[in-house]
Image 1 (cartoon, rainbow, N blue to C red):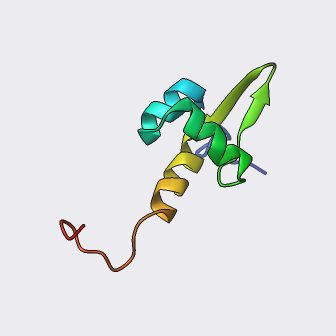
Image 2 (image 1 turned 90 degrees about the vertical axis):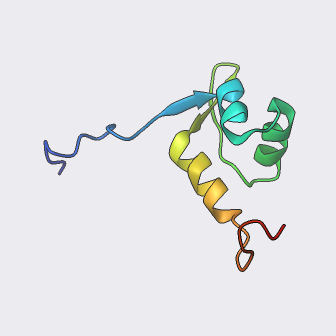
Length: 73
């Protein structure tokens, strides 16, 4: 099923709320709003929220303004 060349968790990086907020340049409160609106998926372990770095990257890429040229904003 899985080859030894591609380990199952090779590219899986987990960030806690504080680290994820810093990565997105947002506050922890703004991060929680994204989760409540369904724009970002959070995984809960105990009382803490964790985020996959790949999903944070996907969120950033999906928010890219199409048609805008660098420096025109």
